[in-house]
Length: 128
Image 1 (cartoon, rainbow, N blue to C red):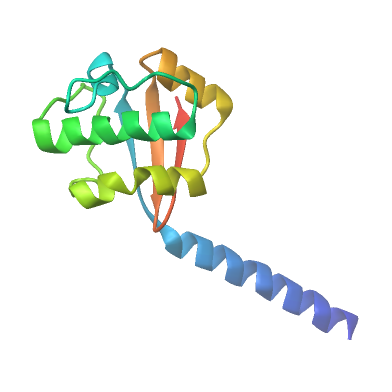
Image 2 (cartoon, one colour):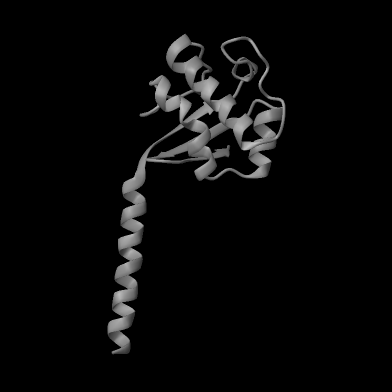
């Protein structure tokens, strides 16, 4: 019986890993530049260290890339954010995703290269 429990436990882990992997959509890298810290109305948005501010900066970076053609050399395309509706979901997706306090600080204060993993309902952001 103990062997059966172990097998069921391992099967559960493998099934969970497969479900999480199926959530994955794509990854991309982008340079956060000073242009990305001003929204489309011209307002400066890098005003505090929070997930919402970082989401707004990344949202603007993706709008600059897809809508306005403002791109940095390191910017890559993605599979999701060409649509205005999906860019608007960034705040919610980042709230459900992963980002460290250090990454938040680096994005607000500097011009880091970021790496973004996009999943069905969340994003994970880290600096490179």
